[in-house]
Length: 435
Image 1 (tube, rainbow, N blue to C red):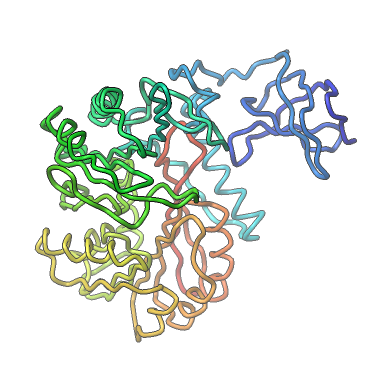
Image 2 (image 1 turned 90 degrees about the vertical axis):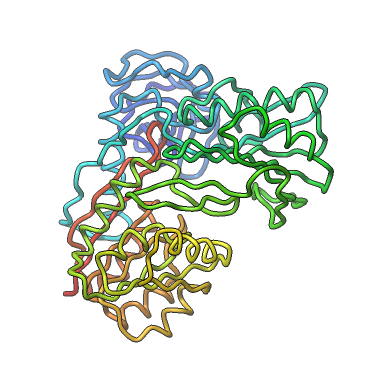
Protein backbone atom coordinates (compact mmCIF):
# COMPACT_ATOMS: atom_id res chain seq x y z
CA UNK A 1 0.00 0.00 0.00
CA UNK A 2 1.51 3.31 -1.11
CA UNK A 3 1.71 5.86 1.74
CA UNK A 4 0.58 9.46 1.21
CA UNK A 5 2.73 12.57 1.39
CA UNK A 6 3.06 13.83 5.00
CA UNK A 7 1.40 10.66 6.30
CA UNK A 8 2.78 9.33 9.58
CA UNK A 9 3.44 5.59 9.56
CA UNK A 10 5.01 3.03 11.85
CA UNK A 11 7.92 1.19 10.28
CA UNK A 12 10.36 -1.58 11.16
CA UNK A 13 13.72 -1.26 9.40
CA UNK A 14 14.74 -4.49 7.70
CA UNK A 15 18.10 -3.70 6.09
CA UNK A 16 20.48 -0.98 4.90
CA UNK A 17 20.42 0.52 1.39
CA UNK A 18 23.44 1.18 -0.80
CA UNK A 19 23.70 4.75 0.53
CA UNK A 20 23.48 3.66 4.18
CA UNK A 21 19.80 4.53 4.59
CA UNK A 22 17.42 2.24 6.46
CA UNK A 23 14.87 0.33 4.37
CA UNK A 24 11.47 -0.65 5.70
CA UNK A 25 8.31 -2.17 4.25
CA UNK A 26 4.91 -0.47 4.55
CA UNK A 27 2.28 -2.98 3.45
CA UNK A 28 4.53 -4.16 0.62
CA UNK A 29 5.77 -0.68 -0.34
CA UNK A 30 9.46 0.21 0.14
CA UNK A 31 10.28 3.18 2.36
CA UNK A 32 13.79 4.67 2.74
CA UNK A 33 14.70 6.43 6.00
CA UNK A 34 18.03 8.24 6.40
CA UNK A 35 19.83 7.46 9.65
CA UNK A 36 17.69 4.43 10.53
CA UNK A 37 19.26 1.06 11.34
CA UNK A 38 18.03 -2.52 10.89
CA UNK A 39 15.85 -3.75 13.75
CA UNK A 40 14.60 -0.29 14.72
CA UNK A 41 10.87 0.43 15.10
CA UNK A 42 10.03 4.00 14.15
CA UNK A 43 7.32 6.52 13.54
CA UNK A 44 8.10 8.12 10.22
CA UNK A 45 6.70 11.11 8.34
CA UNK A 46 6.57 10.58 4.55
CA UNK A 47 8.46 13.38 2.72
CA UNK A 48 8.50 12.01 -0.82
CA UNK A 49 6.45 9.44 -2.72
CA UNK A 50 7.56 7.91 -6.02
CA UNK A 51 6.15 5.10 -8.15
CA UNK A 52 8.11 2.32 -6.46
CA UNK A 53 9.34 3.81 -3.19
CA UNK A 54 8.91 6.57 -0.64
CA UNK A 55 11.25 8.50 1.65
CA UNK A 56 10.54 9.40 5.23
CA UNK A 57 11.97 11.23 8.24
CA UNK A 58 12.07 9.81 11.77
CA UNK A 59 9.64 11.48 14.18
CA UNK A 60 10.12 9.12 17.09
CA UNK A 61 11.90 5.87 17.89
CA UNK A 62 9.94 3.13 19.63
CA UNK A 63 12.79 0.59 19.53
CA UNK A 64 16.42 1.46 18.91
CA UNK A 65 19.05 -0.88 17.49
CA UNK A 66 21.43 -2.38 20.07
CA UNK A 67 24.17 -1.73 17.50
CA UNK A 68 23.57 2.02 17.35
CA UNK A 69 26.51 4.02 18.71
CA UNK A 70 27.16 7.71 19.28
CA UNK A 71 29.16 9.07 16.31
CA UNK A 72 32.38 10.80 17.37
CA UNK A 73 31.93 13.45 14.67
CA UNK A 74 29.62 16.35 15.64
CA UNK A 75 28.52 16.94 12.01
CA UNK A 76 27.69 13.31 11.21
CA UNK A 77 24.30 13.22 9.53
CA UNK A 78 24.85 16.61 7.92
CA UNK A 79 28.22 16.05 6.24
CA UNK A 80 28.06 13.59 3.33
CA UNK A 81 31.48 12.02 3.93
CA UNK A 82 30.40 9.23 6.30
CA UNK A 83 27.16 7.24 6.29
CA UNK A 84 27.64 4.51 8.92
CA UNK A 85 29.34 6.20 11.87
CA UNK A 86 26.22 5.52 13.98
CA UNK A 87 26.59 1.72 13.50
CA UNK A 88 29.08 -0.27 15.57
CA UNK A 89 32.08 -1.48 13.60
CA UNK A 90 31.45 -5.25 13.61
CA UNK A 91 27.99 -4.60 12.16
CA UNK A 92 29.49 -2.29 9.53
CA UNK A 93 31.65 -5.20 8.40
CA UNK A 94 28.66 -7.55 8.32
CA UNK A 95 26.64 -5.05 6.27
CA UNK A 96 29.44 -4.69 3.74
CA UNK A 97 29.91 -8.42 3.33
CA UNK A 98 26.13 -8.76 2.88
CA UNK A 99 26.12 -6.04 0.22
CA UNK A 100 28.70 -7.97 -1.82
CA UNK A 101 26.76 -11.22 -1.35
CA UNK A 102 23.44 -9.62 -2.35
CA UNK A 103 24.94 -7.96 -5.43
CA UNK A 104 26.34 -11.26 -6.68
CA UNK A 105 22.97 -12.97 -6.34
CA UNK A 106 20.60 -10.16 -7.39
CA UNK A 107 22.64 -8.51 -10.15
CA UNK A 108 25.01 -11.23 -11.35
CA UNK A 109 22.74 -14.22 -10.68
CA UNK A 110 25.86 -15.80 -9.19
CA UNK A 111 25.04 -18.32 -6.47
CA UNK A 112 26.98 -20.62 -4.16
CA UNK A 113 30.16 -18.54 -4.24
CA UNK A 114 32.05 -18.18 -0.94
CA UNK A 115 31.94 -14.51 0.11
CA UNK A 116 34.34 -14.36 3.02
CA UNK A 117 34.00 -12.16 6.10
CA UNK A 118 34.93 -8.55 5.37
CA UNK A 119 38.51 -7.86 6.48
CA UNK A 120 38.53 -4.93 8.92
CA UNK A 121 40.65 -1.86 8.38
CA UNK A 122 43.72 -1.55 10.65
CA UNK A 123 42.32 1.86 11.66
CA UNK A 124 38.63 2.76 11.74
CA UNK A 125 39.30 6.49 12.15
CA UNK A 126 42.11 8.77 10.89
CA UNK A 127 42.88 6.41 8.00
CA UNK A 128 42.46 8.66 4.93
CA UNK A 129 45.57 10.15 3.33
CA UNK A 130 43.61 12.53 1.10
CA UNK A 131 40.89 15.13 1.59
CA UNK A 132 39.11 17.48 -0.84
CA UNK A 133 37.77 20.61 0.83
CA UNK A 134 35.40 22.94 -1.05
CA UNK A 135 36.04 26.64 -0.40
CA UNK A 136 33.88 29.75 -0.68
CA UNK A 137 35.68 33.09 -0.39
CA UNK A 138 32.71 35.17 0.79
CA UNK A 139 32.64 37.85 3.51
CA UNK A 140 34.03 35.06 5.71
CA UNK A 141 35.96 32.00 4.58
CA UNK A 142 33.83 28.86 4.24
CA UNK A 143 35.84 25.64 4.10
CA UNK A 144 34.66 22.13 4.89
CA UNK A 145 32.91 19.22 3.22
CA UNK A 146 29.77 18.90 1.15
CA UNK A 147 26.47 17.83 2.64
CA UNK A 148 25.21 14.55 1.19
CA UNK A 149 24.01 14.87 -2.41
CA UNK A 150 24.45 18.65 -2.24
CA UNK A 151 26.87 21.50 -2.92
CA UNK A 152 26.11 23.06 0.46
CA UNK A 153 29.31 23.33 2.50
CA UNK A 154 29.32 21.94 6.03
CA UNK A 155 32.10 23.79 7.81
CA UNK A 156 34.31 21.52 9.89
CA UNK A 157 37.12 21.98 12.38
CA UNK A 158 38.20 18.36 12.07
CA UNK A 159 37.55 15.35 9.83
CA UNK A 160 37.61 12.23 11.99
CA UNK A 161 38.54 9.83 9.19
CA UNK A 162 41.40 12.04 7.88
CA UNK A 163 44.95 11.19 9.00
CA UNK A 164 46.57 13.23 11.77
CA UNK A 165 49.26 14.92 9.64
CA UNK A 166 46.67 15.82 7.02
CA UNK A 167 44.55 17.40 9.76
CA UNK A 168 47.50 19.48 10.96
CA UNK A 169 48.03 20.70 7.40
CA UNK A 170 44.31 21.44 7.03
CA UNK A 171 44.37 23.65 10.14
CA UNK A 172 47.42 25.58 8.93
CA UNK A 173 46.07 26.09 5.39
CA UNK A 174 42.70 27.23 6.68
CA UNK A 175 44.31 29.81 8.95
CA UNK A 176 46.51 31.12 6.12
CA UNK A 177 43.59 31.40 3.68
CA UNK A 178 41.64 33.40 6.28
CA UNK A 179 44.36 36.06 6.20
CA UNK A 180 45.34 36.03 2.51
CA UNK A 181 41.75 35.99 1.17
CA UNK A 182 42.84 34.90 -2.33
CA UNK A 183 39.96 35.05 -4.82
CA UNK A 184 39.21 32.18 -7.14
CA UNK A 185 40.07 29.26 -4.85
CA UNK A 186 37.38 26.57 -5.25
CA UNK A 187 38.97 23.61 -3.47
CA UNK A 188 41.90 22.72 -1.29
CA UNK A 189 43.16 19.17 -1.81
CA UNK A 190 45.59 17.73 0.73
CA UNK A 191 47.54 14.56 -0.02
CA UNK A 192 49.55 12.96 2.76
CA UNK A 193 52.27 10.32 2.60
CA UNK A 194 51.68 8.62 5.92
CA UNK A 195 54.79 6.41 5.89
CA UNK A 196 57.23 9.18 4.94
CA UNK A 197 55.45 11.97 6.83
CA UNK A 198 55.09 14.29 3.83
CA UNK A 199 52.19 16.38 2.56
CA UNK A 200 51.28 18.07 -0.71
CA UNK A 201 48.72 20.89 -0.99
CA UNK A 202 46.78 21.54 -4.21
CA UNK A 203 44.94 24.85 -4.53
CA UNK A 204 42.20 24.48 -7.15
CA UNK A 205 41.24 27.80 -8.74
CA UNK A 206 38.79 28.98 -11.39
CA UNK A 207 41.32 31.43 -12.88
CA UNK A 208 45.06 31.93 -13.31
CA UNK A 209 45.79 34.39 -10.46
CA UNK A 210 49.05 34.78 -8.52
CA UNK A 211 49.06 32.57 -5.43
CA UNK A 212 52.83 32.49 -4.97
CA UNK A 213 52.80 34.45 -1.69
CA UNK A 214 50.10 32.20 -0.22
CA UNK A 215 51.93 29.09 -1.40
CA UNK A 216 55.18 30.17 0.24
CA UNK A 217 53.36 30.84 3.51
CA UNK A 218 51.84 27.35 3.39
CA UNK A 219 55.18 25.63 2.73
CA UNK A 220 56.89 27.69 5.45
CA UNK A 221 54.16 26.82 7.97
CA UNK A 222 55.28 23.19 8.34
CA UNK A 223 58.41 21.19 7.37
CA UNK A 224 56.16 18.25 6.40
CA UNK A 225 54.50 20.28 3.62
CA UNK A 226 56.82 19.57 0.70
CA UNK A 227 55.03 21.56 -1.95
CA UNK A 228 52.04 23.61 -3.09
CA UNK A 229 50.60 23.14 -6.58
CA UNK A 230 47.94 25.22 -8.30
CA UNK A 231 45.33 23.42 -10.39
CA UNK A 232 43.30 25.58 -12.75
CA UNK A 233 39.76 24.33 -13.34
CA UNK A 234 37.47 26.81 -15.11
CA UNK A 235 34.85 24.14 -15.76
CA UNK A 236 31.44 24.24 -14.08
CA UNK A 237 31.31 20.43 -13.98
CA UNK A 238 31.44 18.38 -10.78
CA UNK A 239 35.07 17.41 -11.42
CA UNK A 240 37.33 18.83 -8.71
CA UNK A 241 40.55 18.95 -10.73
CA UNK A 242 41.19 20.48 -14.13
CA UNK A 243 44.03 19.62 -16.52
CA UNK A 244 46.42 22.53 -15.87
CA UNK A 245 48.94 22.27 -13.01
CA UNK A 246 51.49 24.83 -11.86
CA UNK A 247 53.97 24.28 -9.03
CA UNK A 248 53.91 27.38 -6.82
CA UNK A 249 56.34 26.47 -4.03
CA UNK A 250 58.50 23.50 -3.08
CA UNK A 251 58.10 20.13 -4.80
CA UNK A 252 55.39 19.00 -7.23
CA UNK A 253 55.04 15.52 -5.67
CA UNK A 254 55.68 13.46 -2.55
CA UNK A 255 56.88 9.91 -1.97
CA UNK A 256 54.93 7.27 -0.05
CA UNK A 257 55.36 3.57 0.57
CA UNK A 258 53.22 0.43 0.17
CA UNK A 259 54.36 -3.18 0.63
CA UNK A 260 57.96 -2.03 1.04
CA UNK A 261 57.92 -0.20 -2.32
CA UNK A 262 58.20 3.56 -2.86
CA UNK A 263 55.70 5.48 -4.98
CA UNK A 264 55.54 8.98 -6.33
CA UNK A 265 52.29 10.71 -5.40
CA UNK A 266 51.58 13.63 -7.73
CA UNK A 267 48.54 15.94 -7.76
CA UNK A 268 46.79 14.04 -10.57
CA UNK A 269 47.75 10.48 -9.66
CA UNK A 270 45.47 8.03 -7.88
CA UNK A 271 46.90 6.47 -4.73
CA UNK A 272 44.98 4.27 -2.32
CA UNK A 273 43.50 6.52 0.38
CA UNK A 274 43.86 3.88 3.11
CA UNK A 275 47.43 2.64 2.56
CA UNK A 276 47.54 0.32 5.57
CA UNK A 277 44.47 -1.57 4.32
CA UNK A 278 45.71 -1.35 0.72
CA UNK A 279 48.71 -3.44 1.77
CA UNK A 280 46.34 -6.17 2.99
CA UNK A 281 44.32 -6.01 -0.23
CA UNK A 282 47.40 -6.19 -2.46
CA UNK A 283 48.76 -9.15 -0.52
CA UNK A 284 45.45 -10.97 -1.02
CA UNK A 285 45.51 -10.14 -4.76
CA UNK A 286 49.06 -11.53 -4.91
CA UNK A 287 47.93 -14.69 -3.10
CA UNK A 288 44.98 -15.14 -5.49
CA UNK A 289 47.31 -14.79 -8.52
CA UNK A 290 49.18 -17.94 -7.37
CA UNK A 291 52.36 -16.85 -9.14
CA UNK A 292 55.31 -19.22 -9.42
CA UNK A 293 57.71 -16.85 -11.17
CA UNK A 294 57.35 -17.82 -14.83
CA UNK A 295 54.03 -16.11 -15.63
CA UNK A 296 53.15 -13.17 -17.83
CA UNK A 297 50.63 -10.99 -15.97
CA UNK A 298 48.29 -8.38 -17.45
CA UNK A 299 47.39 -5.58 -15.03
CA UNK A 300 44.44 -3.77 -16.60
CA UNK A 301 43.49 -0.31 -15.30
CA UNK A 302 46.89 -0.24 -13.57
CA UNK A 303 46.91 3.42 -12.49
CA UNK A 304 50.37 4.47 -11.28
CA UNK A 305 51.50 0.85 -11.29
CA UNK A 306 51.11 0.08 -7.59
CA UNK A 307 49.75 -3.44 -7.95
CA UNK A 308 51.92 -4.15 -11.02
CA UNK A 309 55.06 -3.45 -9.00
CA UNK A 310 53.83 -5.53 -6.05
CA UNK A 311 53.30 -8.47 -8.44
CA UNK A 312 56.48 -8.00 -10.49
CA UNK A 313 59.00 -9.72 -8.15
CA UNK A 314 56.82 -12.86 -8.26
CA UNK A 315 56.27 -13.02 -12.04
CA UNK A 316 58.33 -13.25 -15.21
CA UNK A 317 56.73 -10.14 -16.68
CA UNK A 318 53.94 -7.70 -15.83
CA UNK A 319 52.18 -5.65 -18.52
CA UNK A 320 50.26 -2.62 -17.22
CA UNK A 321 47.69 -0.63 -19.19
CA UNK A 322 45.93 2.57 -18.16
CA UNK A 323 44.12 5.25 -20.20
CA UNK A 324 45.54 8.21 -18.23
CA UNK A 325 48.94 9.18 -19.72
CA UNK A 326 50.08 10.98 -16.56
CA UNK A 327 49.43 7.83 -14.52
CA UNK A 328 51.52 5.76 -16.96
CA UNK A 329 54.36 8.30 -16.71
CA UNK A 330 54.21 7.90 -12.92
CA UNK A 331 54.09 4.09 -13.24
CA UNK A 332 57.30 4.07 -15.31
CA UNK A 333 58.95 6.41 -12.83
CA UNK A 334 57.82 4.23 -9.93
CA UNK A 335 59.36 1.16 -11.58
CA UNK A 336 62.69 3.01 -11.84
CA UNK A 337 62.35 4.28 -8.27
CA UNK A 338 62.16 0.67 -7.05
CA UNK A 339 64.68 -0.83 -9.48
CA UNK A 340 62.05 -3.09 -11.06
CA UNK A 341 62.83 -3.96 -14.70
CA UNK A 342 60.33 -6.68 -15.67
CA UNK A 343 57.34 -4.36 -16.16
CA UNK A 344 56.06 -2.46 -19.18
CA UNK A 345 53.39 0.23 -19.01
CA UNK A 346 51.14 1.42 -21.82
CA UNK A 347 48.90 4.47 -22.11
CA UNK A 348 45.80 3.16 -23.89
CA UNK A 349 42.18 2.16 -23.40
CA UNK A 350 42.20 -1.35 -21.94
CA UNK A 351 39.64 -2.58 -24.48
CA UNK A 352 41.89 -1.43 -27.33
CA UNK A 353 45.20 -2.55 -25.89
CA UNK A 354 44.10 -6.09 -25.02
CA UNK A 355 43.69 -6.81 -28.74
CA UNK A 356 47.47 -6.42 -29.12
CA UNK A 357 48.25 -8.98 -26.39
CA UNK A 358 48.83 -12.52 -27.66
CA UNK A 359 49.03 -14.48 -24.40
CA UNK A 360 48.94 -13.93 -20.64
CA UNK A 361 48.85 -16.44 -17.81
CA UNK A 362 47.10 -14.26 -15.22
CA UNK A 363 44.95 -11.16 -15.68
CA UNK A 364 44.43 -8.66 -12.87
CA UNK A 365 41.53 -6.23 -13.32
CA UNK A 366 41.29 -3.13 -11.16
CA UNK A 367 38.76 -0.88 -12.93
CA UNK A 368 37.17 2.35 -11.68
CA UNK A 369 33.73 2.31 -10.07
CA UNK A 370 31.95 1.93 -13.42
CA UNK A 371 33.64 -1.45 -13.94
CA UNK A 372 35.15 -2.93 -17.09
CA UNK A 373 34.06 -2.13 -20.60
CA UNK A 374 32.11 -5.08 -22.14
CA UNK A 375 34.46 -5.03 -25.15
CA UNK A 376 37.41 -5.57 -22.84
CA UNK A 377 35.74 -8.52 -21.11
CA UNK A 378 34.85 -10.19 -24.40
CA UNK A 379 38.45 -9.90 -25.62
CA UNK A 380 39.68 -11.20 -22.29
CA UNK A 381 37.47 -14.26 -22.71
CA UNK A 382 39.13 -14.87 -26.07
CA UNK A 383 42.61 -14.43 -24.57
CA UNK A 384 41.63 -16.86 -21.81
CA UNK A 385 44.29 -16.53 -19.08
CA UNK A 386 44.46 -19.37 -16.55
CA UNK A 387 43.31 -17.14 -13.72
CA UNK A 388 41.64 -13.76 -13.34
CA UNK A 389 41.87 -11.66 -10.19
CA UNK A 390 39.30 -8.85 -10.13
CA UNK A 391 39.82 -5.98 -7.66
CA UNK A 392 36.56 -4.06 -7.35
CA UNK A 393 35.44 -0.88 -5.59
CA UNK A 394 31.76 -1.39 -6.44
CA UNK A 395 29.82 -4.62 -5.74
CA UNK A 396 27.19 -3.89 -8.42
CA UNK A 397 29.63 -3.56 -11.32
CA UNK A 398 31.67 -6.46 -9.95
CA UNK A 399 28.59 -8.69 -10.10
CA UNK A 400 27.70 -7.49 -13.59
CA UNK A 401 31.22 -8.17 -14.92
CA UNK A 402 31.60 -11.54 -13.20
CA UNK A 403 28.35 -12.64 -14.84
CA UNK A 404 29.96 -12.01 -18.24
CA UNK A 405 33.18 -13.78 -17.30
CA UNK A 406 31.23 -16.81 -16.10
CA UNK A 407 30.90 -17.86 -19.74
CA UNK A 408 34.36 -19.42 -19.44
CA UNK A 409 35.31 -18.98 -15.78
CA UNK A 410 34.16 -20.10 -12.36
CA UNK A 411 34.12 -17.55 -9.56
CA UNK A 412 36.17 -19.30 -6.90
CA UNK A 413 36.21 -16.89 -3.94
CA UNK A 414 35.30 -13.29 -3.16
CA UNK A 415 37.11 -11.50 -0.33
CA UNK A 416 35.63 -8.13 0.78
CA UNK A 417 37.86 -5.48 2.38
CA UNK A 418 36.80 -2.47 4.41
CA UNK A 419 38.87 0.21 2.73
CA UNK A 420 36.60 3.03 3.92
CA UNK A 421 35.37 2.56 7.52
CA UNK A 422 32.33 4.65 8.57
CA UNK A 423 31.16 4.79 4.93
CA UNK A 424 29.03 2.45 2.81
CA UNK A 425 31.86 1.68 0.39
CA UNK A 426 33.41 -1.77 0.19
CA UNK A 427 36.20 -3.19 -1.96
CA UNK A 428 36.49 -6.83 -2.98
CA UNK A 429 39.02 -9.18 -4.53
CA UNK A 430 37.55 -12.03 -6.57
CA UNK A 431 39.45 -15.03 -7.95
CA UNK A 432 38.24 -16.75 -11.13
CA UNK A 433 39.48 -20.01 -12.65
CA UNK A 434 38.92 -21.46 -16.10
CA UNK A 435 36.05 -23.91 -16.27
